[in-house]
Image (cartoon, rainbow, N blue to C red; front, side):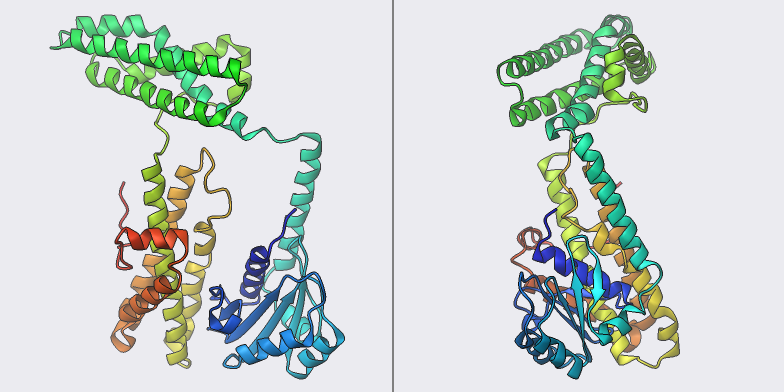
Length: 425
């Protein structure tokens, strides 16, 4: 199991949120005088070191110096601390934590132990259970190795298309007869086009078979043919359904043919599994579809950072306002899982992930838009919150323009005024 310095910073951010600092966020490389994670709400500065050797006193001194405007200082290290580092941290009330590759964080000195006692809910228990699940999964994979990526895609994407194409061959004659007897104008020309499209798809299938025989799995080329076949089969079904509307239910006819094929073929049932439901074949998302979701995700992230910064500013300006004190935790709760919904690192590009990522991004956008609207409605008159959010969002956009997704948002001409809650159907 690999555990990088980026993973360590993510872990420190998660641990800070468990300590109650829900606005904890990672800084840019080189920003904030070298601090890795900060919480403006709790005035906490954090340094994370992924060293193989013990952290020394100079590193702790740099944290205290760089975070001089913060009231609390936390240090996370993989390899522990020297005696001098311990002494300096104790003298300056710096909390020292140690982490490992399993994601466990342990207090090292008295200040860290005191903070650790404040952990909300069953955070430690959740980490232990997560680690237990990871170990059980590792043990399972040793005995049952995972399917190769091409085989996962073949089962989930390619084979259902083949089933649909087979069903279309089975019902082609009844569909052709229905079209000829429908009396529709241009039925002959349409039938000629459908036959030509069927021949083209058959050619793709033959090319796929030939490639598999010569090169067992050259998956990139096969994936391109599969996508063309998928789009072709979807197009055939749409055309049949369009021209035979009111004459016969084409989709139900094909679903029934797929079900019969599965009942007759035990091997096919084994491939698709018992939960397979015959349905209309949909084309795979295009590169432009993915780009649109990524651009929307980037826009939501920019506004999220603006809202978080504005929340901290409202908190700073209204520390004793009872209305604010009663409602502030609701804002952080609403926004707490937005970073997870926008996470790019957890398998964003899998063959079946488009719908999931689209929905995740929609939900993140709705939550950020809801929090922003509530802030503006309740605090806009006194503090011009809308202007604050726009200003912070633009500032974050400029500071992060070296990131691929943010650069794409920038180059596409989008602004941070994009209506986040306004999504297409």
